[in-house]
Each structure stands twice: as C-alpha cells, then as structure tokens.
Length: 69
Image (cartoon, rainbow, N blue to C red; front, side):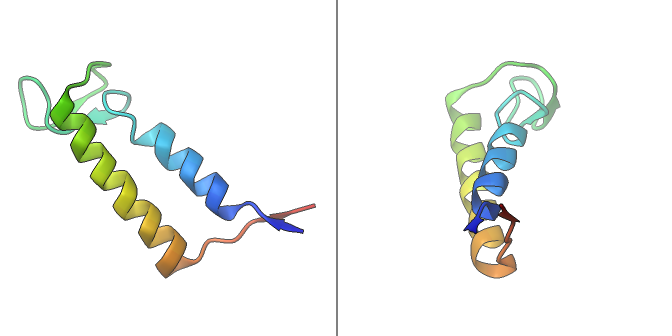
C-alpha cells in the first residue's frame, strides 16, 4: 500500500492557498482581500511562504498518512 497523505495535503493546500482564490495577502487596496481573483508578485511570495510552512508542519510534525489500496 502506498502513502497518499503527503500528495493529498499538498494538492489541497495548493488549491486553497492560490493567491486571489479564497484570499490574498497583501491585497491591492487592503491588507487582506477575499475572493478578488487577482494577484501580484508580493502576494505570490507571501502565499509561497505560507504553503511551504504549512506543508512542513503537516509532513514533519503532524505526519499525515492516507493509505489507499
């Protein structure tokens, strides 16, 4: 059986942390904007740092495992 936990966590976090989809930090007019479907270089950088830190937490600290098959 293969461990699909890291793949599942990475895909879900990638979708949720796409800049402008649910929220954007920093926004164009305010610090946090919700559902504006726009992005900037700064927000891409911030969301990349958030993604990397959350992936590290889930993979190393929480040790998410999902076995299918």
